[in-house]
Amino acid sequence: MTAASACGKIILLGEHAVVYGRPALAVPLPQVRATAEVETLEQGEAGAVRIEAPDVGLSTWLHTLKPDHPLAKIVHMVRQALKIEDHPALELRVRSSIPVASGLGSGTAVSVAIVRALSKHWGVPLNTEQQSALAYEVEKLHHGTPSGIDNTVVAYEQPVHFIRGEAPKPFSIGTSTTLVVGDTGQRSNTSVAVGNVRKAWQADTARYEALFDRIGEVVDRGRAAIKAGDLAALGSLMDQNQALLQEMGVSSSELEMLIKAARSSGALGAKLSGAGMGGNMIALVDAAEAGSIEKALQAAGAKWTLTAEVGP
Ligand code: PMV
Image (tube, rainbow, N blue to C red; front, top):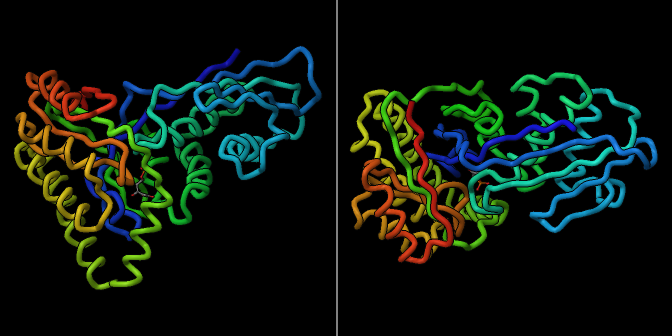
């Protein structure tokens, strides 16, 4: 049996505007992971792949899935990339502890875990860039214009400063930095959120370009604050980013409730993370206060919370 895994991710600053060429910062979330296991089957036709993905209620053969099903697409693409034309029947088991459709990169992590497990199983190594590029092809199924930030941070498993179309710049966070993550329990549909922003941008391009520019500036200042180890400044920039995301129409009353609860219980700053309209929010906190902020989020309706140390 061959196994591999991939981490979840958090967008610290810059989601949505990153689709329009502005910079964004993302960090890995290794505390939650997707795992893929590959095992050769004694029986079954050559080339057959049994897929077991209990978290999404899937137990079937690859050939019964449409070619644009995310799991089918990644398996087909890995076979193509590795030039595997024929192989003994195998079973692919996929599990994930990353909440689904909630802005934490669960789909991307599943893709990267499968890429890693299959390439290991067939003994053909793929570098980080290749893993990221394959996962990017699956991102395109979710919405037509993915920036590529999700597949990049998940495949690199390092904080990245990302600009669409440019080589990602991995960086390290030198100061102890604690985030509390809170899930609204509402699904965040990336294609709907990105589609809504696109329609709004088409209807009022000047207003949206100005919002994206302001987010870009917040990201640049955020990168400088991280370099300087200035967490108070970073928290305030997260709040500014949230105000701009709210203006863009991608927040929700549930997200706002959790963000307010985090701020009023002492967070340095808080914002939604990912596509929004549901999904998760993040709060930058003093490590000593993480527990009480998690409790405050739960009291405000969070369905799931997590404290993550993203520093050194
Ligand atoms: O799919 P999510 O929730 O991780 O959001 C991805 C981030 C967006 O900026 C909204 C889309 C993108 O392609 O960058």
